[in-house]
Length: 279
Ligand SMILES: [Mn+2]
View (cartoon, rainbow, N blue to C red):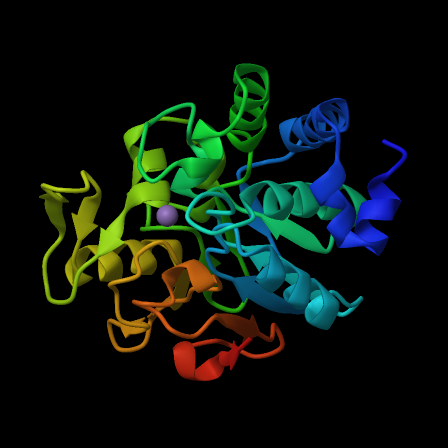
């Protein structure tokens, strides 16, 4: 696609992409995601974790301008569309960046990217698409990876931990399964407890600290970095569960947009070993 470099150079041109240019971008992105595994294993560099951006194109542009550098890897934790004012610009820009910088930037799947599996509201981005584009976005975004790990104690994903034995099991998780739903839709609640049932209103699976501790021990990880649940405390479970948001769409509940920076050169034991910056 000839205008990838133009988009990377001048992000605002995404607002004027024609339908066939968006189709081209989706085709190329879908092909790239098809070749990749569900689990992103980060091995080097400093990692910048970005929470839900939810149509906050301004936040994404700022993050790229400040943190996209050769020494950094950027991991976005899902939910790129809906709620905020510029969903189309946000996702098109991120897809172009992913194609241009395939080894520097990683886009994980959130529940808002799983439109082909579960209907949800608000879904203003999805509802505003014509049927052909809807099909193409939903098919492309359903191929995003599900989680990222670092060798020094971090696992990152959108919602909650999947009930698996080893981190590599994430590569076997299929779209729409219960394990997929735990990752993309799951919430954590304060207090002891394992699986606490699905929330009556939202249908989201709820988990307590016993579940968190059990899965983290099995996976050999110390800290989970996630997003998805604006009513969660930033720090839970003795600062081993960190929830961040990077969208102004949540400003009434979470007034500050934050990102998390993890260095890979020493063990990360709790969120105290991670730098949290307000953007
Ligand atoms: Mn979410």
